[in-house]
Image (cartoon, rainbow, N blue to C red):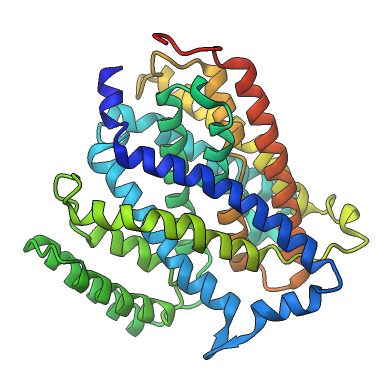
Length: 387
């Protein structure tokens, strides 16, 4: 246990608590957006996000610009996990890694079964994602009954899940490539890696290079947010202490991302006009694929793959956890929201599919979060050992 406590650092505490608060704010933003867009002010509210800003709309710059910073933070968190966190030792890393793989493949497979051969088939990536903020916010409601190892497992699971979503975006939601722009973006990334190698610690060259890389990635056909993850792995990690470049940037980004960028994304992308037929649309193949994928596919995939990893001796279950708690964490993994909506916007071009998907995602996330909360409330001990 002492070994695991060593990884429960100040930065992890900051991350956990900022994501917890962010989840509560996200819930408020979503409710606000849904109420306003379906009121007498709905047309003006929609126009706010569709208002031209330069060559594109406000919504576009949030999704393709500000969300790159969100992915930069995800990359920095993943980098920390790989170097000194849950993913730094193979045995420890395999449990959340394999569990996350199951939590992506099973939901995607469920959606594919429902939608094979249909225009909505491209939405298979939608139920693969986990929303870190909402998942950790739900877990935090259980207070000090939650073991550190379960917090770390769910956090590592969600971060790996986000990486999987990023790879899915890069591989399956790229229509056409502009090779010249892509090669320029990758060349900039290469230069930043050289800066890292020669021990340039000043953030300015990395941030400036990141902007250039983002610009050319934006015009390459690959979604520009990928540049955020690449930039994260170019920034020097050092020994990961409070003086390291990676730590300084990650610590700085926590609050702007949690309290500004992700809430703005929620406000701009939950402007769903509830049609009279919305209930009927819930039984469409796409909606059923999303709902069954998130609510059932996520916990089943996470649990079965984690169980297989332990049985095959690829990893081990932490001593203070039980399998029913892993299943409960898998239920919270079914809270898709931010990343699921993000993939929806890439998967579909028609408003009908997009709006129906958003409604299915929001309802599924509510159900998954509620079930996960009550499941863990029943399965966690009343007090932790040693208290």
